[in-house]
Amino acid sequence: MKVDVIVVGAGIVGLFTAYELAKKGLVVTVVEKEPRPGMGVSARHANVIHVVQLPFSSLKSRLCLEGNRLYSKYSEELGFKLKRTVAFLAATGPSARLKTLLAARYLRWKLPAWVGVTAVPGRHVREAEPAASDRIAWAVRVGGYGIVDAREVVDSLVRGLKRVGGEILVSAEAVAASLTGDSVKVETSGGVTLEARGMVNAAGLYSDRVAAWFGDHFKIIPVKGVMTLHESPKVETILAHIASKPSRETKGGGIIPQLDGRTLLGPSYAEAMSKKDYGYNTADVEMLVAKFSPLLGSPPSKPVEVVVGLRPTTPGRDFIISRSHRSPRVVHLVGIESPGLTAAPAIARRVMEIIRKVV
Ligand SMILES: Cc1cc2nc3c(=O)[nH]c(=O)nc-3n(C[C@H](O)[C@H](O)[C@H](O)COP(=O)(O)OP(=O)(O)OC[C@H]3O[C@@H](n4cnc5c(N)ncnc54)[C@H](O)[C@@H]3O)c2cc1C
Picture 1 (cartoon, rainbow, N blue to C red):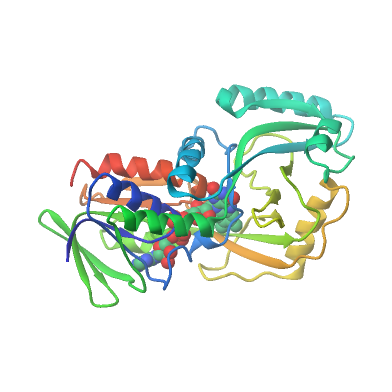
Picture 2 (cartoon, protein in one colour):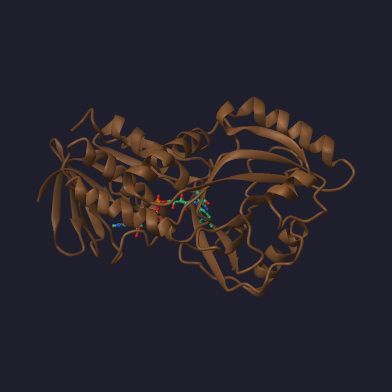
């Protein structure tokens, strides 16, 4: 079967990429090893359209801001719900005012004006977020955040992709790939061999394995994030602890509203044992409840669900978008950890710029 571009992996990143390529008139086939799209990393996360990502100089931070803006357009175009909200980075104790004033100044310097960053006293937080604790003395209010339901985004992308002529093969694991002349061949577990002028490796946790078929070597370190879902208290905004100093390890999580009305706590951040290590224990759950309860006026109800996700991180802790050293026809997307959901539309545009030179 001959197409213009093969995309390996029907997660949020592969789907946004395939949709963009197909919209430009290319014949695109996505191969996905699972029986449904969006069952990998894209199925287990916090559903936040992010704003603040450290370090600000990283590719993931830049693509996060670009992707954030694009979500409004795609929400209309594809018909999925996007609820815009704000985040309060909260501080308690006597130095809260100074801490938030300094943090707000730093964030205003680093972020574009559309975000809207201000330091606000605790009563402003409680006016906007009645569930917030009166222990919060001051907070940095950061605008521009969003909440989606990733399942709905995936489903709308699948429909959108089909509308623009793209195809998805499910239960079709890419098992080998090779370069021949001016094309790329991908063999799938179902015995189908696809040939294309370009290939995009959007295989998430397994992008290192796919890259290795081309002699390109990357290291994926799976990092676990445990999240709990609660029926109450309901929140409308994101509440998080302010970091004492800016650091790239501020994956501290938060209290996050979900579109179904539940409240998510987390995620946590700890290296996993393997790419299949979705285990958690009561200490993980207790840690989340203990960490975030001080930001709430009343403690969260018993968790109704615990979700464990794995971030496909790299040693440099940044996204890698690179051509294969063997061929410009192959683009690897590696280390697409958080905020990959947010950045996905921007990643798709970067891939488009690379791929259109060769197909
Ligand atoms: C705990 C946690 C919380 C997060 N919270 C947020 C958040 O709130 N906001 C945000 O922006 N980001 C968040 N992220 C990050 C975000 O979830 C990911 O960056 C994003 O989902 C990655 O999408 P992907 O398409 O690259 O990967 P995936 O969704 O994993 O897609 C890759 C696909 O490739 C398939 N595949 C793999 N190998 C093959 C093969 N050989 N052949 C065929 N198919 C193959 C897999 O089955 C999978 O479906 C979070 C991540 C975690 C873990």
